[in-house]
Image (cartoon, one colour):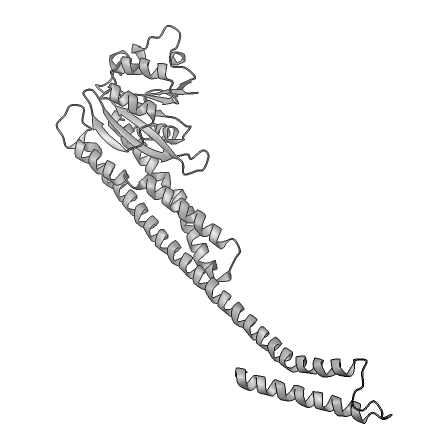
Length: 347
C-alpha cells in the first residue's frame, strides 16, 4: 500500500494503494483532513492527521499540492529527489528534508524523507519502503494517554526514529573495526578487502550523518521564531537529545576511521616486513647455491677432461692411484672453494 492515513484517536491506520481508497463509503476528503469534522467532543484537542505517501506519481503530486497548498518549489524538491537536508518555512507549513538509508535492503544507500508539517497535520513522502512511519505510529499510540500528539511531535518523532536507525549499523561497524584490529597481524588473505569494505561503510554512514547536526540546530532555531507556521517551542527541548546522538555517532565514526587507517598502515607494514623476510631467505638460498656452484663448476672441467676420448695422464697404469689422486684433489679443491667463498661472503 502506497498511502497510509493515521490519527492517534483512531484505533488503526488506514492503508490504500490509491488516495481515493482511503475514504470509507459515504465519507468525504474533508472528513479526513479538516479537523472540525473529526474533532473530539470532550475537549478542544484536535488530533492531527498524518498522510504517508510512498513513491508518489507526478499526477498525485499535483493533486496533493493543489489540495494542501504546497509551494511549487517544495513539490519540485520532493518529486526530483532533492538530497540536501534542510528546514524551510513556508506560508502554511514548514518542510523538513531528512535522509535515512534503505533499512529494508540493509544497504547504506540514501533514502530521502520529506516531512511537511501543517498546524493540523503532517504529510510525508519517500520513494522506498521504510519502517520509520510504522515505528512512529506505534510510538504515538503508546503515548497518547499521557500527552497530546501534535503535528510538530510527529515530525520530531520521525527525525528521532531516523537518527536512532543509524545506531545498529554503527554497532556493526564497531564490531567489524575491532575484529580487524585484533586480526590485523594474522595476515588473512581477505584482510585488505575487509578493511576497504568497512571504510566504505564508514564513509557512507558519515556522509548520511554529516549535515544532520546542522539541520537539527536549524530546526531548534526555528522553534524560537514567532511565525505562526514555525514549530512549537516545546519540541525544541527534545531536539537537543537528537543532536547529542548525532554528535556522538559522528564522533564514533571518526574514531573508527582513524582505527581503520591505522590498521591499514599496520597491515601494509606487516606485508613489507614479511616480504623483506622472504627476500632475505631467498638471498640466503641463492648465496648457498652460489657457493655450491663455485665448488662444483671447476670439478666439471676435470671430470670432463678425463671423460674425453683422448690420451690423458695415468691411463697407462692398471691401478687406481691416479683415480684416487684425482678424487682427492677434487675433494680438497671443493673444500677450499667452499671455505674461501664463505670467507669472502661472510657466511
